[in-house]
Length: 336
Ligand code: UDP
Image (cartoon, rainbow, N blue to C red; front, side, top):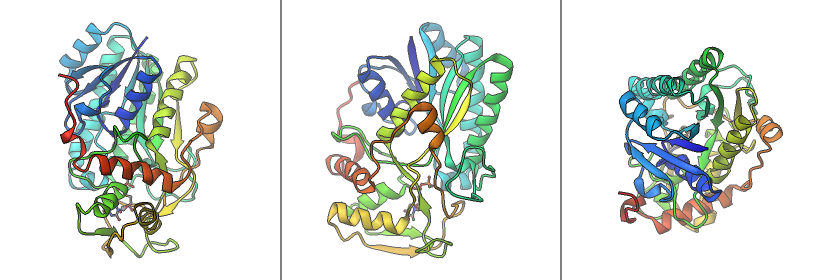
């Protein structure tokens, strides 16, 4: 059995590929490298550069790689503020990409998919922690595109028998503990890496978006999960599908919320740096509080996050930031 990982050169994808390879799986990676990095891909995986919206290319991969039985799909855009400015980019890549992928999978009778969904499908939750069946009214096009992907694949399960697990990530952070792979977005927008860029002197200060939310300290609250724990959940989801269970959706979070201010304080402690910060206007599309109820993943998949300490999560991200101040650019290319 081979596992095809789409978007395997991205942040969460590359950590998952790494774990899959370490567990002796036959792994094939497809990535268009628009946001991913070839240096992030474990060299034991086979790599194809191409776009999942390119049906000819995707057909050629499935034609060549006859052993593919499961697809793990990370190849999406995932930046909330960008999606607010350019919604069509998100619908084209995320929903359009999903449709092409499903067509090609159906044609090649590859009938299992694990894919990245998000807490942003819920929008402004009516209660926290959020359970999978709770109301979903996304407050940004990114969340809407992921909800669309979930809905589309449901009908493809019904019609073509394509079984799926959608994993609704809450906020991911951290890096592989040896600091060899980590988070490198060309235009960084995420809280933890931005804070650490301020700590390392790459940015002058952190801007905290909004200080007037209905939370204890007025800043938004998020639920952080370590990228290695997320990667592990994908492997458990593959096993789940291989055991022929029904298609389903799981929240992946720690079930603990930290405000943006608390994350800043934790990062100051971990790094020992002052990290200047100011509170500015709210960022459009941000719900006040997102905290997962992850009981379902724990009970059904047997998922047990290993990193439940926010300082430890930040510490691994800090390790990566210090060894890779410019991200992957200084790393050697290991795959041609
Ligand atoms: N955030 C912030 N300053 C930044 C980047 C992010 O205050 O420079 C806030 C953002 O408004 C949100 C939280 O940090 O409340 C998490 O945002 P991030 O972009 O990391 O992840 P998201 O929740 O959008 O997936």
